[in-house]
Amino acid sequence: MPELPEVETVRRGLANRLQSFVIQEAEILRERAVASPGGATAFCRGLVGQTVGEWRRRGKYLIAQLLDPSTGEPSGSWGVHLRMTGQFQWHEEPTEPCQHTRARFWNAMEQELRFVDVRSFGEMWWVPQGTATESVITGLKRLGPEPFSEEFNACYLQKKLKGSTRSIKAALLDQSLVAGAGNIYADESLFAAGIAPQTPAGRLNRKQLEHVCDSLVHVLEISIGVGGTTFSDFRDLEGVNGNYGGQAAVYRRTGQPCLNCGTAIDRVKLAGRSTHWCPTCQS
Ligand code: ZN
View 1 (tube, rainbow, N blue to C red):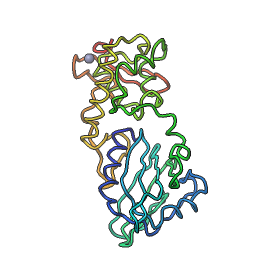
View 2: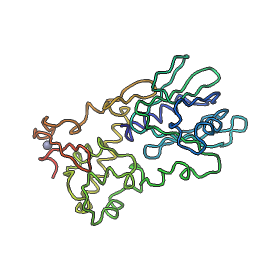
View 3: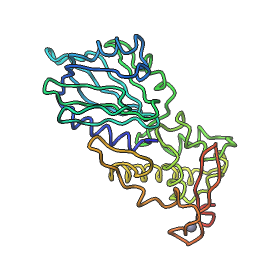
View 4: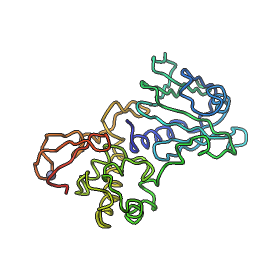
């Protein structure tokens, strides 16, 4: 599943490829790919004829500003969530779409941005100009601060986690606590912070929470720098797979020696997710 670094990698790819891309034609091949009111019809009507402006990321949501090509004024927004397997492809020349193609967007030069999604959980929204984005893309309302924002710090975590008995691993996966940190980065950052994933979140002191914040930001930055992870079948727009997998310290390394102390990496289930950790380095 794409996590924050992968989504950020996709955002950069879209920003790069779609500079002054005017949507000449749009086609939705599966109705449920569009989650905004009015479905595919309203979505296509909203997007066609508009210039794709800046792309921003909020948690794992991608949101493009649409612009009126004649005035350059904002004319709405285009939201995307990749969910499990959604990915964008850039096609310079006309090609036949594969069976998992859910949406296609062309410019006047017949260059195509294609949305392919094997599991079909990915969603897109059209938000009319003047409408609050969160009222259409309702999942945005539930998101906690971005890990890179000033709001996300030890003081914030201490306040939010006070008295909490759930594990710190479960807390980090909670998108309303911090947006965009998924399984891989929760495991990697807790290893980097030297904190056992099953530790009740409310029991961590200020110093430990500082380590959690710093480690999470650090592993996310590293991963964004290398273009996301190699886990699963993630590809960026140009079909390139990132390589954080080569650097994972604990994630999916069950039974292998800890890079730090040689202890076998252990796997436990927490919050329903496989959790990888070193019983010696993390306490
Ligand atoms: Zn270790």
